[in-house]
Length: 189
Image (cartoon, rainbow, N blue to C red; front, side):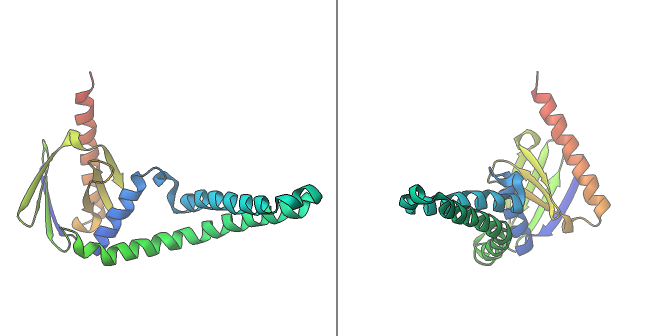
């Protein structure tokens, strides 16, 4: 599986890396709408609970208006977060790409990845790194590329645009997955 890939690490690659890193987190598998739903449930319960507690004295006189307004607040916050959370994530990604990307050590640098039988060798601006296949804990494939996770915060990016075609990218993904499967199978007794 000897293959060399070279590309320039740009702002879009950085944004894709941030999204892939987010997918590893505790709420990552929920997706953008799922995280909005989760946030909406929490904020809805908080707002409704605050309303009911602040009108505690009215609960004993006539509970229905207090409970109805609390329910309306809950539903409003839930729907608001489901609609607004994706916009917030997009704006956050845009802001991070604008402000943090230029500070990244590999911003606008040429990256070379050499895939071999023992692992992956990377070169960025004269600095080399070597990663054995068993050191990768997860493979994340997105519409932007392939990301090989060394931990929850460290990912090795292989953007789709670094390969000449979709077929070449799919072939690389198959080879990497096979290599990782073989390396983890060799670790088990």
